[in-house]
Length: 150
Length: 222
Image (cartoon, rainbow over the protein chains, first blue to last red):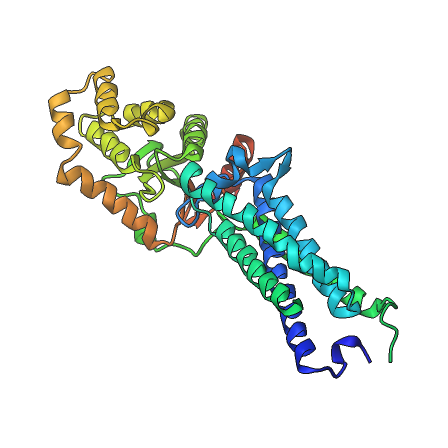
């Protein structure tokens, strides 16, 4: 029998649900970030009506210390995803700490990127907005998690 | 009670396999999306229209339709490519230029199209087309694109008064709108888009690849 199926009290079942939410949202964020990373490297050879991703991904802000922002995002989501998976599987308390505090950093970073997109680059990229949404959701989950653990 | 610290290998292998599969799927998607071939457009749009601007041999078997936006940097690059194609294969191909100004991201694109059409009324569509692409950076960033277009018209020795009236005339606006409508009708959403003999092609990444793609249609026709 795995831990996932272990009968548990209502509080820990709620916690499990929260951890699953972390997994789902981090997975969406990860895939989105991978998509953006590939787009950053391949570069489009067209101007598109659909997104302003071309402008955003080719701007000087798309690289931080030589690393594409999208790749940093992918790294962030993979850490969250693994932490949630490890917790779901092994119930390691340290992972709960990661899930509680790391999303705050991700959220703040995301706010900065949104600011850059809206006021500096002045182009909105849908995939970047999706990433802002997932990082905001993760932040909300982390707040719930902190509250639960108090 | 199972051992909580023991690694559950089957769980992790499944997780890793799913993750790798998903990531590979997304990578492939990202590589292929953007300007892939769409559906086959209606024949009437694919035929050369009377008011189309063309280069090359009008009777040629290979018809290349270029949907372009004067404010799009990629369109600038590809305008040089298509010009070279039309020059190199002046007997075998005809290049048709159509306007597809992406107004939502390029505020001056439509006016630039109108400027070329207004020049066209004085027989200098291609001259204006070239100068507008060549000086794209200059007018794209300017708050007075119209003033710059007028300067270009002056350089081309156009009748300035006529040009100034024509650029905002119904005739010119309608022509640009007609091209734009045809682009939207066939479901285009990015520029430049090239359609060769009715087939939307993946925009080739270099002139050589473009040339090869065009040549592949020669074989087909023969």
